[in-house]
Amino acid sequence: SQSRYNFSGQPKPYHYQENSSRFEPWADKIIHLQIEQDPSEFEFNNVDKYTPEDGAFKMEYQARLGLHYANDLVEDSDLILMSDVDEIWNRKLAPKLDAHLTAYNLLSFKMEFYAYYFNLRNTYGPDSSWFGTVAVKGATWKNKNPQYFRDNRHTGNILDNAGFHFSWCGDVK
Image 1 (tube, one colour):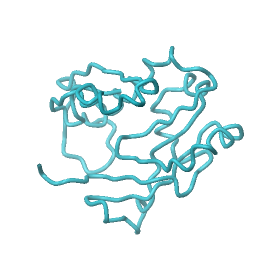
Image 2: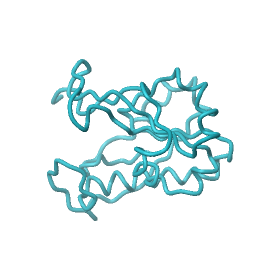
Image 3: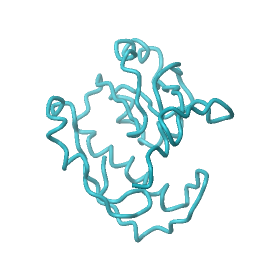
């Protein structure tokens, strides 16, 4: 799902819509959901940790809930991967996902965590690994709220060496 606002409540374009031609080879696999949000409903503070009451996290929560608008298109046997755009999962895992999901309802991807620059890996502390991307079957997806999967991404079957998480990358431009 994509909003016309970022998590700070500032307007932004629908990037996928503006660049959809770049994804034409995969168009039959992409469901683009444009969700409507009103950031004026929320108070935005400068927080440095997960604070569910803050506007930024409420915006993120609403955007994630927007994924359920596609439920009518999901088959019980479909493989669903929920991921943030800065989480790049290891495609070598793809052939193994179906087999793992027969034993578990939820797969969690343990990723290397990079911050600020693509060559600056966090190797110390609780954030040395990142759990963000999850995989589930369509039947499980339709019976849970998308936030449930985000909140439980540290549980279930954990797949090691599952990819990369890049946070706060780029410069001020």
